[in-house]
Length: 301
Figure 1: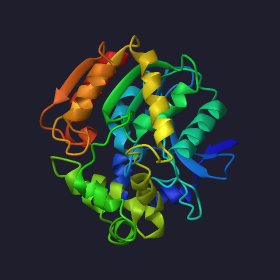
Figure 2: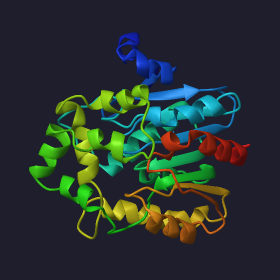
Figure 3: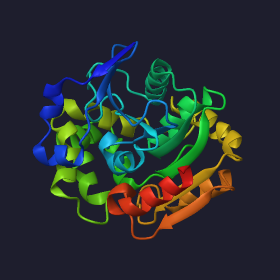
């Protein structure tokens, strides 16, 4: 397993509007599966680590305001999951939760990160906490942003449709009905031109949307689904985080991870401070980045 700077050509290929909002030079990591993953590693190498884990269909771009606001005091590590962002998008690959958790764990081992503040959003909840449960005492402080990491049958119909055979593939991969819709439906405020392009850039074709589709199919909704045992194990591990310092910052207008999930987090992490942003959507880091940064910075500081 090796790391290096991402080839300049790949970074330079980003539209200028995206580069202005994403002023970073990512690294590339080669996992044992042969997968090539992009990740950010910003800030002093000897500083406390903040690990930020994104979901679907976003990428490390989502965390840019946190990275820019924290990298003077913290080492910010932000991976792009396989199939997302600037990471590779292999077609004949078994994308599922366990693989994403394994890739994140390999990256942490390669970078020799044994303890970190953990920030999770969307699928970043199960992936980040899944990697953490395999590492005793890994989590120093935890920040939860509109995610779930426990069994639930609560799923919006518009996402359920994207799980259907054939129809789901046509909607998600053919018509870009997931990533394309997210740039409108995941926010309450219109995205800037650079942000809109950034979220659409990694998913420009049928092939590029392979992981977007697989993430949707991998949502565990009950016994028999291959991801169900993993999500149950992750949920059980949350008991060990009850006494860790916790912060929950929640977009109150999220139609996917709504207050049903927020209430469950309050039950599982009763000691955590809760900040609910009533006018922010699923991508709360787009709708209210200043408040999220202020809350996270103060909490970690």
